[in-house]
Amino acid sequence: MHTLEECCSLIEKHINRLNIGLKAPRNLYEPIEYVLKQGGKRLRPAMTLMACNLFSEEVQQAVMPAVAIEVFHNFTLLHDDVMDKADIRRNQPTVHKKWSENAAILSGDAMQVLAYQYITQSRQDLLPSLLQVFSDTALQVCEGQQYDMNFETRSDVSIEEYRHMITLKTAVLLASSLKIGAICGDADKQNVEALYHFGISLGLTFQILDDWLDVYSDPKVFGKATGGDILTGKKTFLLITALERADAATRSQLTALLNNREIADDVKITQVKALYDRLDVNRTVQQTIDEYYIETMQYLQKVQIADDSRKEGLKNLAGMLLKREK
Image 1 (cartoon, rainbow, N blue to C red):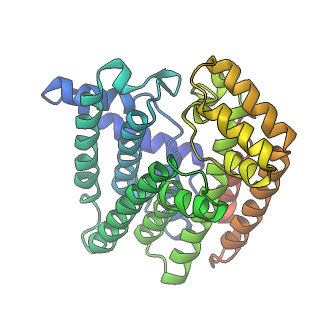
Image 2: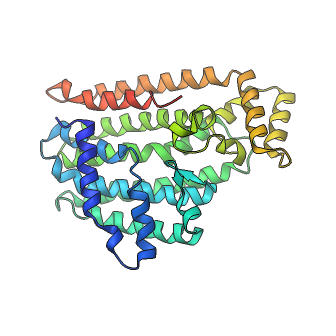
């Protein structure tokens, strides 16, 4: 079995071999090279290789689909950063800050096209299935992003609506990374679906923890400035929980604080965090993360292979995601 580190290394080598920065025009491809060379965790493509490796030793046949997933994921980050007006990503200036918004949009568009070019370099007998999963996922991510944008102007977003949104925006890409890997490994339908649902539950856990980290983590470790979700009024698990739990007076206070453009950013972040603490939002976040993690492991148990020890890599990866800097 390939370890997570070996899978990440294999992906890194193939991304470096793409030589995207040598393409012309340079000002289209240089931002793409900049983003891909920032690294990141390579989590999604590594999961593709690990899922393939559950059923086959021929992980090489999953490499280009995995690269496609990584390029697509980074494309979504380029556009997300423009929409969110984010200044920092992975401790580096975002593309729209380093170049321009137009550059981020156009280079992001090019990345999406490149992702489709890379996935076509798959086993031809599997290509129809892989393209179907990849295209469905790409559209779902767009749907999730639209729901996220819709929530910006609403004050009545429910936890269930939020869960649906992050399923589309975040979880389906993790789940599809696993599904594509399992297909490349010639897994049967039952195992493909079990891994997909493992990925959905893992993605929900990942995103709720990400919401928490945006408020409470060390920005040097998290890789981007904290408090950004508070400043933009983003409907996160923390904010929705606080609004549902608060009495009328506290809800009014929290809403007024989020809409106040006169106070300094650091003051707003501090005061919102104080309200979260008063409403015991932290405890709810941790309970929810624990529940989703249990569900995640239950889906992994449903994957039927001769040697269960081969699942350890994915099990450890899921555990690692819960140990991110808090």
